[in-house]
Image 1 (cartoon, rainbow, N blue to C red):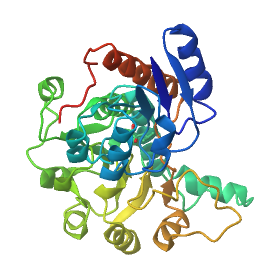
Image 2: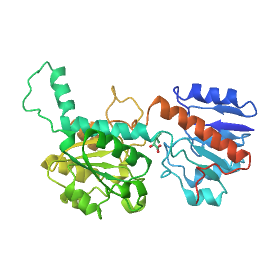
Image 3: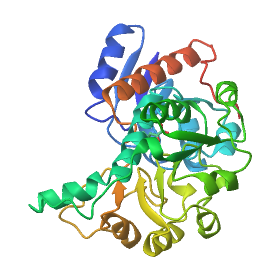
Image 4: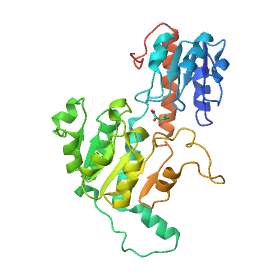
Length: 331
Ligand code: COI
């Protein structure tokens, strides 16, 4: 059995090689190149591929893979919004994702960014870097006195709720699918409007689907508390960047942390330090002292990376053995 892995980074390589050693019945080869309709040719002669979400996987990509005889794809990540599932079905693909590689990786990151913004540590850090050691006016707010609204109570949202409760924050939540534990705790509000009205801080933890495209927009921002803080460690498509910039300009939004950007493909995970930065709206955000940007690295911990590689290769192997991995997508 032969698996070909795309987009393997230096940090993933040792995990992948170790998995190969522990599964001598499987040959695992890899490239650092990302999967496209062109690089699909590299998978010729393999039985399955292993990928992670970076570029859109279009009909052309599924067709090219299918032409190489590939119909099994395990994704090392959670999000599936880059997949043309109609095409995947047309070309008879079996696909899995890795939904539980480490919810704590993203939840911790969101909590840290939220706390940094309420305590204004990024602004204080910037002053200190400039040898300005004055206190005022960079005064913070205590987490225990904030109401934090969590949108999305899947694995990540639920870990974040626990972390925030540890700070003593009052946590409220909204999700169209209710989790029984969160329900038992009485954290759900009836509507997003209620969550917007009541929250001092809002954290987004939902997948990108057509129904929630630009859910953070002029109208929803208008419903929020004045000086709200927003954290987006989910997907860039959830936030209308123009509306966000307006909200930051007016002070309605006092601070924003994001790990994602609606046009991030081709910009993130590249070094722009000596080049012209390609996106003026993203530059506008980066240049603000009250905006924190991380380049889609909320997930990026040793624990998460190891689980992403191991669990996705296990899923490839299950498919190859004619079984359904628990994380097989239904489409
Ligand atoms: C995900 O797991 O969906 C992420 O956003 C992480 C990234 C490696 C694609």
